[in-house]
Amino acid sequence: MRTAMPRVLPAVPAVVAVLAGVVLLTACGSQTSGAPGGGAPDDAAGQPRMSPPQGLPGDPDGLEKDGVRITGLSEPPRSGDPAPATVTFEVANGEAESFTYTVTFSLVSESGAVLINTDHTVPAVGAGRTVTGTVALDAEHRPDAIDGVQARIAEVRRVPTDEAPAETGPCPSSGVRLTADDGDAAMGLRVVGLHLENCGTGDFRLDGYPLLEVLDEARTPVSGVRVLRGSGGISTVTGFDDPPQPVTLKPGETASAALMWRNTTEAGAPVNAPYIRARPKPGAGPVMLTPELDLGTTGKLGVSPWKKDDGTR
Image (cartoon, rainbow, N blue to C red; front, side):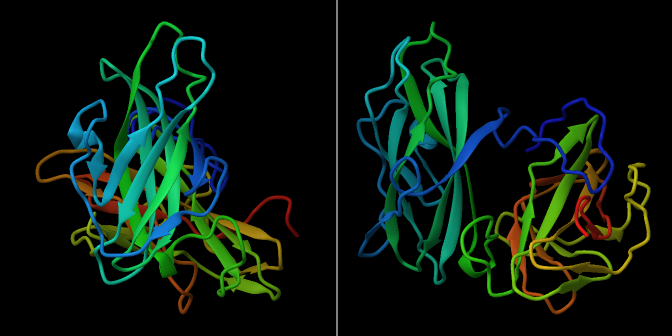
């Protein structure tokens, strides 16, 4: 769920500022599964296994969620100790295809107050596999007056590995990287930027809007939501309703578009759709992104046209 943060919205397609995440505090970083600092996960052979965590502090409901389980916590840091709390965990994929997981781990006080959140990516967990990893929850922002901390799993999101956004590493076979930023919110209005980088060796041409499919927590299409080209009357944001223009991205160049919606809730059931399946243009391969759409009962999602970013040719 996204939390409204009063501020002036920037012109599209400028990069929008960081939102509050799923757990009402800003995520403090992102890592790849493995040892703190980004090693590869240890792959444990055998079928997925999940059992209730034993001997760890905190609510058991926060120690296991959606196939992810906290298995250990280092000695909690005390006041004045800069050492992070190190959490060990395992991810079990019981489905028939590979998934890439993004897990939000939280460090909380004994009273339950959230001290810090860390997003941690576990790539390519194969079908029927269980992998293990570690994540360091940096305690430097923990108030000195608080002794004793607990770890918990705040949120788990997963996308098919062949549709996972490639923010770093080798260029995808498509020759482009498609990602979403954390977005911006003001008085119930949300704006999330989409970013496209030509990381290939040839030109990449665009002429129009990103193609979007809104998906629920089970990654199935959501009915009753209209994807509108332009703002569709949702709000007035500079540049959002500009007509599309042909864009040619040479290797290394980037373009941006944006999503816009409101979380207004009136009569009916509100729609919360964590995922979208996005294509930069017709015929392009899909990428599954996680903009956390809290659409309320509006039934509308606006999308702006692609524009080449400032500073590119």
